[in-house]
Image (cartoon, one colour):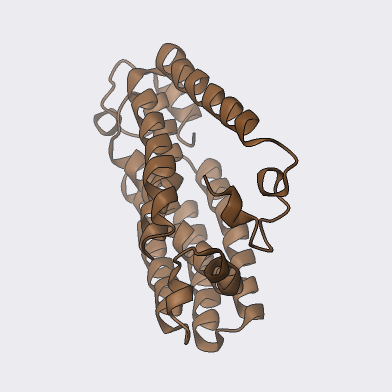
Length: 247
């Protein structure tokens, strides 16, 4: 769908489709086959709820987010939804519900994506504009709205990352660690907002890359068995839930 536009951008021109190393037909067949097989596997081997969430992820990314990239700057917010659904799928696979702890994981991934992408969008704003993609950085030459989005969503991330503790799926060590991580991430976002330079955007990008595995590591290291009333499945053994708190 985007191979012609990707070919115009320095950061994507060498990918297999825009560079012509694989054919559009071959890519479509492989992608469609994997999508159908993957959803069938989730339906048969996991549970229908996880399969529904998987289908929602696929549809919202391919049929909603992808076309919106050439229509509105809100595409980034819309695209953060399918980007954040996989952790909720993991929770649904483990508990057969979409209860509060699963939504907390969704929230962290949702808000994490926005400062992460604002850094990329600022670094490659000319690339995106030249290819016809409507990004906030392309209609914000001074960078104030891009910077405000990065700071605002990093602050929201700091708040939502506390919910696993409040919902009793993580302990006190997690709280201390996630506050330190979130505050550090916020510091890089504020530095980017103050200078709006390429080095500051690059540092924010790498801070986002480091944040996610460190945050997940904290969640794993200090996980707690969630109360059964939160996961809604009294039949689940505590051992199973304990081993799958983080999908």
